[in-house]
Length: 164
Image (cartoon, rainbow, N blue to C red; front, side, top):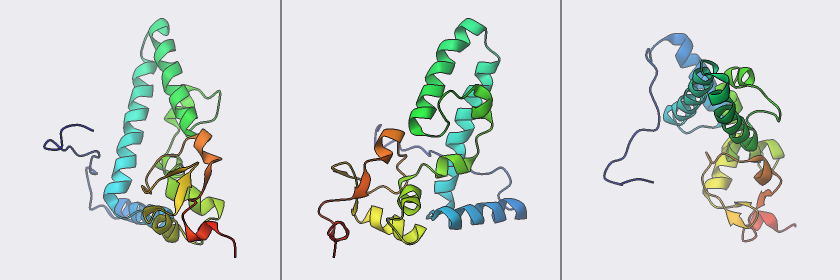
């Protein structure tokens, strides 16, 4: 976690924040994925930028140095479910912010039909009604791995888990 007295931003803001097309695109993504504010969106854009930057730097390396790092990056991203098994660095460079947003707990809850709207999904998660296996997760922005995806459901203590 780090020293609580030395908090750091986990995002970078847009270079030109007041351009109309950027504002429209961000607003559309906020509504589509039920994000609370633009900082949440910027966090995923920064994460994507770092992933793509690593992939670009690997393309410039020698073959023997590149193999080990490339394997680690591709394994991590496929475990998260961002890229399919057997993908290449070109697939990593083709990623968009939507690919990351689709792996959020809030989005998956909505896509699985456990919530009627994307905003209800956020509320269910933050109020502790959603569990991954036996573990209650109350962070809507949690990135769900492929293994955990099958374990998603209502928490045992939630009134939603009881039929009737």
